Image (cartoon, rainbow, N blue to C red; front, side):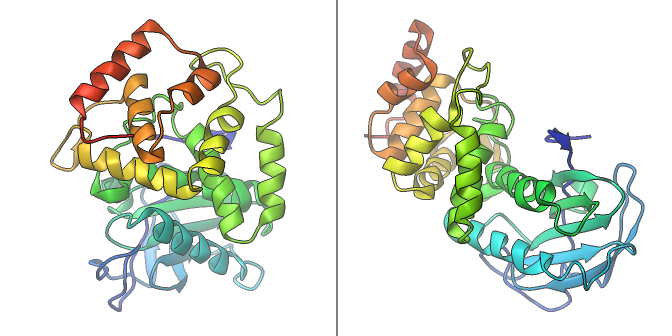
Length: 301
């Protein structure tokens, strides 16, 4: 079902449609595709004729025929805020708006596709199925999660996510993104609720070592001590500038030494002590770090 298709539930993000008038797209320039009043689904098991419910310079929202526009009225302002905050924080995410598709009582969960993907007509999309119009597992968690996926895979005009293999396919970086997003949108109660969960002793992962606390010991200290979301924005910028790519697409994954090197550049601080506390350290990683310092000399700290 594509990357991120299984995240706690089956998730569905879809790359969007554009509007008939020229508009700004996720940060820069005019939308190259007209956003039609209807959009016929043709991906996975989806076969609904969607209707454009609302749009602005950054977001287009589509409903299937079973969505009650009155009951769903709060969705558009929310997803528009997410799109505007995200592009203001991390930069443009490519051509076209963010296209959000909402279903009622079908295709439950969410998936995503980006503007490099023909399956969703080359549009950045988040496609979700709700059972209730205030479903916070979808609205509060999955839509922000998949916005983080889009950021990682398309920001700064590069296709791919070299560090994704290290933080296990979106999951851990998305916690950083979501925590900052909730605070940025004035949703402090959500930020506090999720950070309380993510910092518990029980919230661990088996990678890169057993009982790793990604948010508590790595991402939250980065957010707290090195400029909030700006440290990850700088990280993605340095990766786009220096990491190997061809034709705008990253050509390989990042190793642990390279991650620490690029993150140290973003933080303007040697993060090896923080990485050692969070993940442990090995002779192999030290060799990768030393090689990264030679291969990417413009990254300084």
